[in-house]
Image (cartoon, rainbow, N blue to C red; front, top):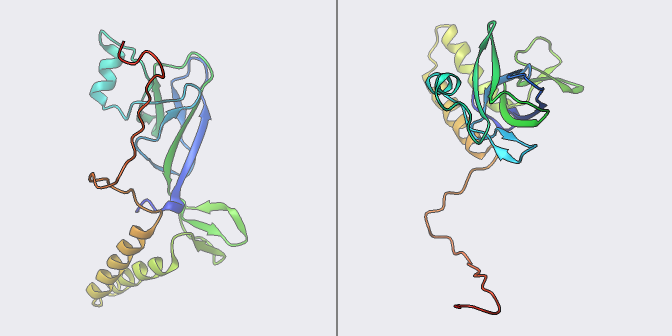
Length: 190
């Protein structure tokens, strides 16, 4: 599943004193890297940490850093968001994530699902893309030629995705910038 703009959501939650692990939203598919912030301290966090680095922090000589660190790991068969150091007060954390819910119920804009179940449901991803992707899969399942339809569907999906949500401009040093120097009015050079 591509990270379409309509599938990216923000989750904000409050920590609890002496609680290190937190549940993800019900529609959580994947966390968007570099979006985890401690809003109470206006600081980015560091993560995801590998199992090796996590164990080094938990068991090693130095076990506390200057920023919060995080890792996604299982707890009783479910993914959990772990924070280190364990919070000692209530703080607000936020991150963006990819939702797995790409179907919504017609007439109820706040209800989303991961799969179609009723005729009254529609895709929040462009219907043309869904139709093209479904067509080649149906042809394949029926044992019919499908390669041309698959190529066209992939091409159109790539085009739509390139348009989706905009794109970061990469600066190769060609953008003119205005630099402003701030110098004191008196005592310059003394």
